[in-house]
Image (cartoon, rainbow, N blue to C red; front, side, top):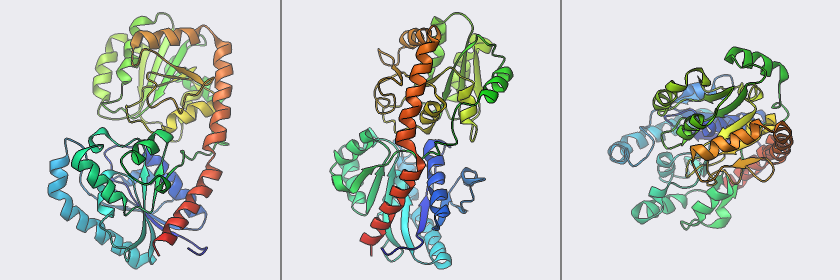
Length: 383
């Protein structure tokens, strides 16, 4: 495709507001800053607030899951018609669509049916390994068939790419592209540390462990709360996020009183939250991608303690934190936390290494350049 502005339409309907959703908006904003025309079609237009990214609200039903499959099957055709009509409106207003960028399974399957005269190319984003339900039988065949329409697939991690290629998708169609973060804008904030800790009621000697996470029922954030049963002294656990697990976590934390504090998703102030913490906590899903919150903690200079190797080994590399063993074990997590509490020099050393690693891997400048180049190549293949 010759140089010039791209016309990119991103479709992302979701039940949650997490790292993938905000990463999508950030990459769209980067494209827009580089001169491309972008549009986000989503059922949650608030995701783009303050970003400058144009949004068109759209409802396309629930995300595809084991529980929703019957509902999605029944509604697929009318939602697909709505999907196509939105693309036609955007094409009429902004000219030919160079790239249709889709993020979740239902939209990926819909995009497989979109003719090239409406969208020159289709690009998938895979924000984590392919769900186990899609790795065999009819579901696997449908996934692989839909992937033939994709001109390029962006995988957020190496484990994500391996899961896609293992299903039969060509290796050269899938590329790992990490989260793009403005690493120069994220770092330790001493003023925020003092202010936020005061708001939390944390004294100078309080050891604060923070977890910023989507509160998904399949995430083992409960392990973090249960670890408190094995920790004495001046300790505060901060859990920041939203999701269907929140109510059960609050009930679990109730006996611990003010040793646990819940916060809403700290959009735009994640660095301030982690500046007020001494270590970061991460309870990965079995099909975890590459959570932005973990990277933000590393950029602030915080070692990361993960509750399981699967989903964390690409993030928590040697010298930047610890993966507790056995997996998802409250006693093991408590033991590691106590080790860090007693060793401030280790916290500082591993925090520095964590920041160095994050700066090298997640700098938005090279990621946005590679992303735009890949979209141009994809659009060129669709001509």
